[in-house]
Length: 163
Picture 1: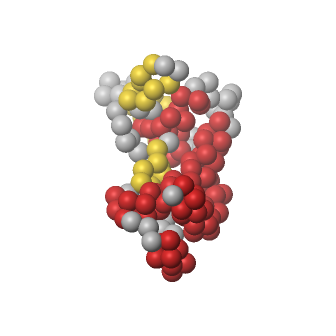
Picture 2: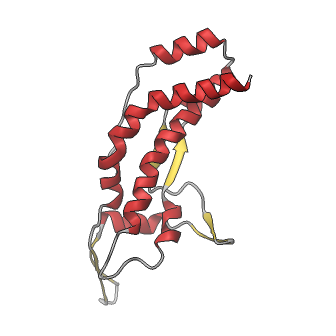
C-alpha cells in the first residue's frame, strides 16, 4: 500500500480565474480544497462500493462499518489530497456508537495475509487478498485527476457567485 500516485494539473487557467475575480488567500484555499475533496471522493466512493462486493464465501457482514476506515485527507497549503486505508483518528462513529477505527482490518482484506501461527504453534490461517482499494484506484484514479481542474473551476464559480 505504499504506492504513491501523483497527478499534476496545469494551473494556468485556475490562476487566471483567481486574478480575474480578485480572490483573497482564504477564498483561494477554500476553492482549491473543495475541488480536491470532490475529486478525492470519487476514488473513496468507488473503494466503498468495491468493499461492499468483497466475499469470503459469503458477503462481509460488517462492510458498512468497515467502510468508515477508508480515509481522505487534504494536505496543508492546498497542495494535494490523500486517499487510503490509513488511521487518521482513533475512533469512528457508526450508528451513534464510537468504535475503534477499522482501517487496520481493511489493509488485511486488501493485501491478504500469509500463514500465521501463535507462539504456541496454533494455526491462525490465511486471508486471501481481495484488492478492493487497489482496483478502485485503477478504476477511478485517472477520472478523478482529469476532473480535478473542472472541480476547482466549479468551486471558484460557486464562491464568486456567493460574493
